[in-house]
Length: 89
Image 1: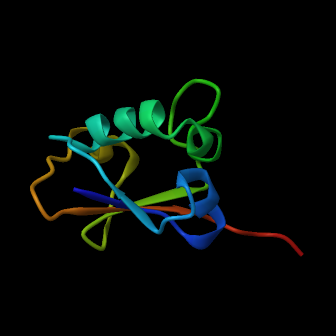
Image 2: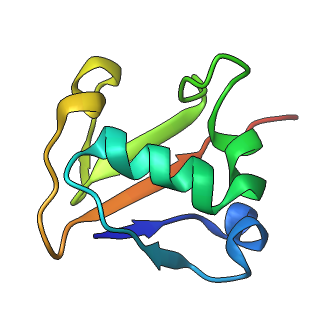
């Protein structure tokens, strides 16, 4: 499956727009993300290891709710987008 990140986070994965991960579920993909891309971890996960409230996850263009995200199965060709909300004034 492909994990895609926005421009603001690309430096955390070596300047690429996406990485390929082997995972059966979204939870497994997020665990691999933590271990394989530690620079991205601080932006996506809080101190307890949960996805930060301001991070949006979408599987194949569809929003994942927080409880559904853990169990969502993945298949070859799936795309998981990790988007960090940007705010300020």
